[in-house]
Length: 177
Ligand code: AR6
Image 1: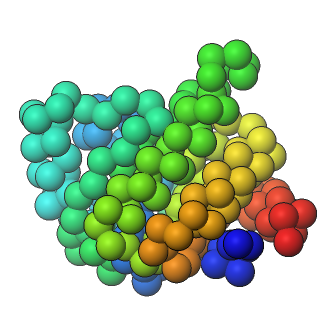
Image 2 (image 1 turned 60 degrees about the horizontal axis):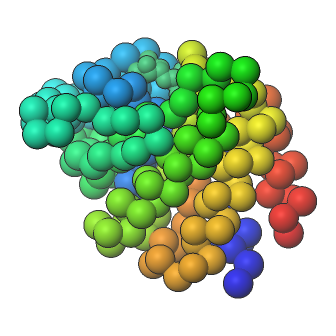
């Protein structure tokens, strides 16, 4: 089944979107940082960090490519799914597979929590320097593959903070239609 009609690409701030879950591009400490991570913790309030600390106490952080879930605190969403993208290291350290795992594991966790609408930032394409065109290709392909298997996910939003990623994602989605 073609899932392209269930993907939407927009420009904006992910902390403002009305969805069941938003995804955070976190780091393995789960204790916050800059970029989208900083914005989510600022807007969501201290509850999210408290829940992250409990997860750290339980399992010792989050590995690259994996995902954990907290509530949304003061955000409009019910959940924040924190995933850790790969740091780009020239492309020979399984960065592509790890980025795909971020999208897959986040969607899996979302589906387990009956999430119907979910928003992603452009994971790893900021401080972690993953090439934006390649990231767009991987994210669209991975999301399409997941939602066409009947997971209960009705809508996937890509919320882009800058034009370059937005343009790559739109182009990539159009090639899949
Ligand atoms: N809404 C949507 N996208 C945003 C927002 C926002 N409010 N703010 C930034 N972006 P980055 P990474 C975009 O650096 O590369 C953190 O310190 C941004 O323009 O946030 O995965 C973590 O703690 C870019 O397109 O995440 C980690 O240490 C995208 O979000 C590290 O950065 C991702 O950029 C993770 O690096």
